Length: 246
Image 1 (cartoon, rainbow, N blue to C red):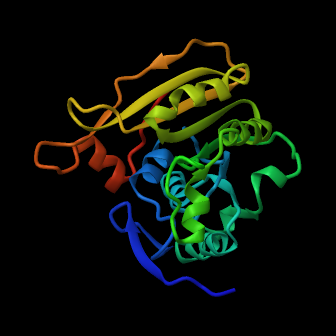
Image 2 (cartoon, rainbow, N blue to C red; image 1 turned 60 degrees about the vertical axis):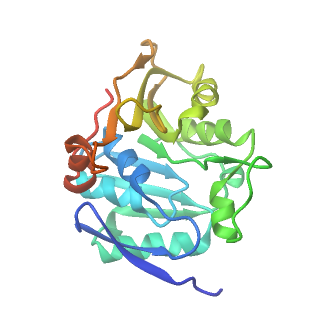
C-alpha cells in the first residue's frame, strides 16, 4: 500500500504533534471542540467512530490523562497514522484502534462511558466528491448513515453513558431524529463564526436512556472583529480547556 505524504501539525499550542495526510481528510478545530466537549474523567473509557488520524482522540487523552480510548477507522492508512500519532505523543498504551466499516462491525458489549464522533458532512449525490479517495470517503454521507453512527455508538455505551457529536448546523433535525427514543438529556451548543452570524456547526450531547428534556445552550462565538479567536475559543484550542455542555 502506497503511503500518502504527511504534514506534521501541532495541536493544543504544540502539546500534540500529529501527522496528517497532505491530501485527503485533515482535522481542524471541529475535532478539538469535539474533544473538549466530552465529559470524560480519569479511569473512564471512550469510543470514537471515524477517528481518522486521531486528532480528536488524542486531544481528549491529552486533557484527560487517565482516559482509555478505542477508535474505529475504516481507512487503513489513517488507522496506522492514528497509532503512530499515539506513539509519538506517548499515549499508545491507552489506545485501541479497530480497523473496519461501521456497517460490518459485530455487536459488542455495552461497556463504554462515553462516545464521540465527527460524522461526514456532505450528502452523497449532492456535492462534488473530492478527487482524493480517502477524502471523498471521509466526507461522503448517505441518507441512512447518521442513524447508523448513532446506533453503533448507542450499542457500545453503558446505560447513562454520553454521546457527543459535532456536525454542520443544518444536520440538527436529522441528528435529533437519530437520537430519539435512544437518548435523553440532549444539550445543543451552536458554534458561531462571528457574533451575529448563523451557526456553522453544532455540538450535540445526550445521555443513553435519560429522560431529562432537551436544552438549547447559548453556544460560543469563534472569532472576534479582527478575525482572531475569542478568548473562550483560544482557551479550548490552545490550553485544552473543557467545553462543558452538561
